[in-house]
Image (tube, rainbow, N blue to C red; front, side, top):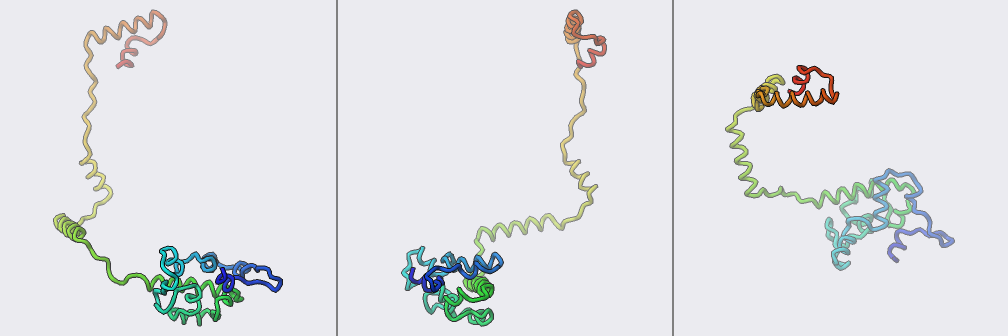
Length: 211
């Protein structure tokens, strides 16, 4: 708490905590997030990563310069990997002055570019190793492509005709042949409906509709 009070809080002469300078000026969202994360220790510096892993504070070395603990003050003020950025963005000589400097956009730009440089320097430079299974799969894929031969282009009409040839064909519909007993059964149903006046359709039309 004492570290936060000394470096991030600005107390007025009356003893009140003043609003942070970066919240009083207009900043793009990315720059505002960079400054806010630094103030509340919501970043990926080793001072916080080591805390979550149980590493003692004195062993949370800076992975870039490996000279001292990578705290917020070291990252912004002392790390030699960002000397040119400090000169470019006019970074002050103390963390408290940086938090209260007039142009907070310069501080946000410095943090954004420094974070990006840090991440880029920590990325592995070697190529990922290809497993034996991937090598075998790629070999057979190349062999299969070689057996197929070069690809030829098809027009839309040719592709449609090719799909039609591959599509299973349906046989023509044939009306089932009716036997005499089927016609007699339909006739009895028709007579019953006529008797009860359920239909006025002629017999021939009724038979065709039934079929």
